[in-house]
Length: 312
Image (cartoon, rainbow, N blue to C red; front, side, top):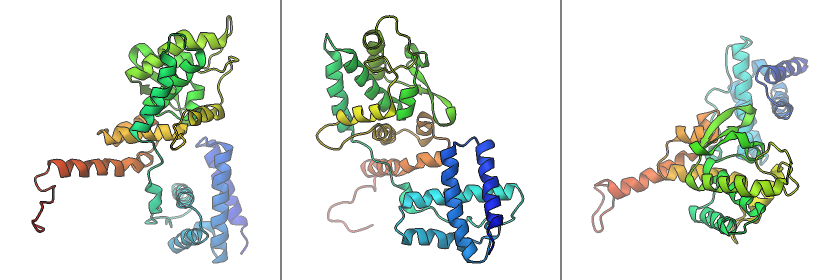
């Protein structure tokens, strides 16, 4: 079957994503690859993308699993198809969405890796001890402030690197963060993070910049340059203990996980992390459920199984 119609439809959709939705070129390329892959599947059945059926989508997902593709990648492909067919519906090119009732792979809900509270505490105590000595240098003050901020605000590594001095309002214990798509959000900061940032700004940053140097980035290198993402990754990894090697992303997930474990609602966590969709934050739902189960066992009159008594 001639796939010219599919090629044209995919090209028009990618143009929509680029112009109307403002997606970056790399994201558009990834969507394009996924759609081209699915187009090959439906063409093999003698159909076009606009005439695809639900069984085509199900077969495509099953074949991906058969090829050993990771569930997260399969879920991303399904998300791509759902967005594509929603666009076709809105544009009145189809009157039936073949992705309806297609479930996302269960492991998409698996919680990202995070550190235990004691592991985070050890990291912060290690850098905090170096930053608290009377003659602490700029590097020690900077590294401790970065770790405190990563954990306190759940920031992405790119958001750390993009922070400017004027983004901080330490008198109000908060920071203005620019996330994905240049969306801004206010992130509250705890006392430990505020104190670490104050010491870095007052004592550490001036020593790293040198006299007369001008730099808008909050966190700078020994040469007074803005830090790169790779450098922050390597610093966090180097500050890990003897156990698992940490990363900025793990500290971000640790922030969210520990908040949920201590009773925070998912909407609050969504706002803090800057997730555009609550569905992204719902990976933390099972943490909340585990806490609810523990509370139920502890406080509900029927929550505990009594020794020597059968099921009631």
